Length: 442
Image (cartoon, rainbow, N blue to C red; front, side, top):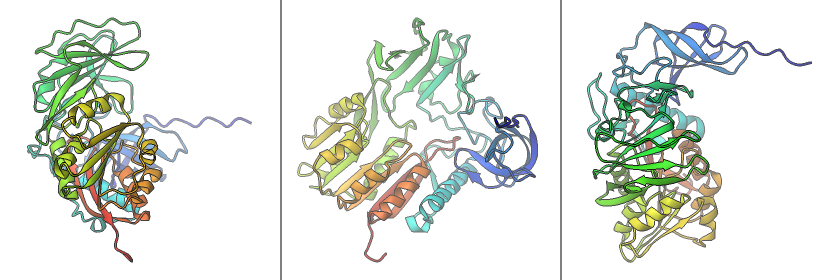
């Protein structure tokens, strides 16, 4: 006999007390029947009316928006962005919280993930619970730092640029993104008609005047003539292969960090906050303390940001091996590091390439894995190489916590953890953990 379909609860409203913050930009509450609600647009300690946006009877949890605030937190402000709020743009999570409160909430999330997934307290990892703002981001409540140097706009059926609503393919048309960096805003993407495009990505390089627009057309659509408010290079994403092709201008932008210029081609990855690359390099190098003659690994090395910083510090008697899966990123890394003869960049997945290198011993390791983390196999391999110190750069605290537990099993302890708020108004944070071999018996 086929089971009766569960009743959808979308649109149902519950008056609830808001509990602690959870990973993902929401807080936890419970209905009077005990069902868990993940509530956006709320703050811990508030009493709100929460309207269900996803879920059904009998589900483990429901998703909801706080549509009416009955008792407000002292940390609540009116969202500065006119496009923020229930059912609106999903790009920001904490527009309704004071900047200091946002950082406290992020710190609570990192601490909770460490405790739950790795059994570690802040004291265990040498962290005082502080989440550091990037330079220039300490703004008064009601103001928003303009930090995002890469913005991917979705496009409505009638050609208007906008941003996706939370967990939705629907587009919220906008006339200005408050967290977009000045170099992105000055392109005027929101003013143009983008009919036929699926998305438009705007890139404003840090440390150069390079500007780039990456167009992803709908199947069969013709590219528009791009005439923006300042000179840009234009790239196109092939609708079948996903490959990026140059339409006009350079196929790359020049990004500046750690005193060096880095070529980043075809809309490739670079840290989004203008201060992020320098902030992270400084934290990694201060944690590793490279020495002349060291042998170092840079895993998931991208275009060579950390590999270049390491090479500069280990000198001609040292060596650096970088591993990166993206073909274009490897080409850029080799170009960016061509003046370091003792740097080698290998293409492929870390878990496949690293065992083939034959390396059995290293002094230092940097790993900056994707959001899913490095995983048990890679961590076990790294733990066997006897590195004096390992720097783990993480964009997801849950993945970091899981991998730190694997490192502990491999004989490493966390010496220090630093947490940076490089994505203001969102739930994202960046962490830098420095690991070293655990003392016997600890």
